[in-house]
Length: 144
Image (cartoon, rainbow, N blue to C red; front, side):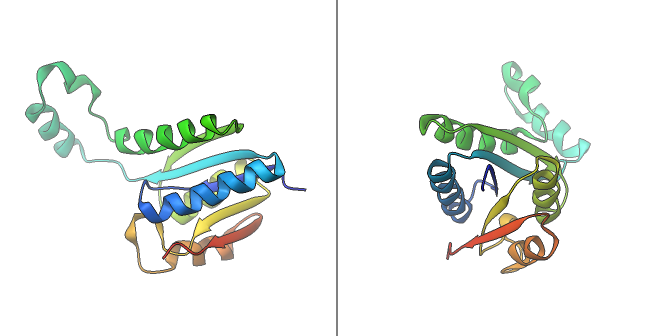
């Protein structure tokens, strides 16, 4: 029985295809959707530069995870519109490792991943790593 479906996203169009498939699967099985994303921290120097260049009233909001947070919020909003139960989490690290770790920590039954890697990595490296290291079944969606 499928109770929890994990999916990774980096906000790309190809990742969105995998997310849509995972949402369809979650609806079909009445499963919880686990939305995962990975990030690499922005250097302090780059953050300071961005804050200096930003208008004063929004400088407080510049942080290294803002893009990841926005990506997760978009997927959460779509899941909510479909009436899905969902959880989202982002962690620092390699996208494939992060997806496997988050799926394992949340007891996912299946990971849905696109056949083209997150963060535009070498073709197939994320799905290949996930398939070899996943703590559960893996469903690879054709996204290219």
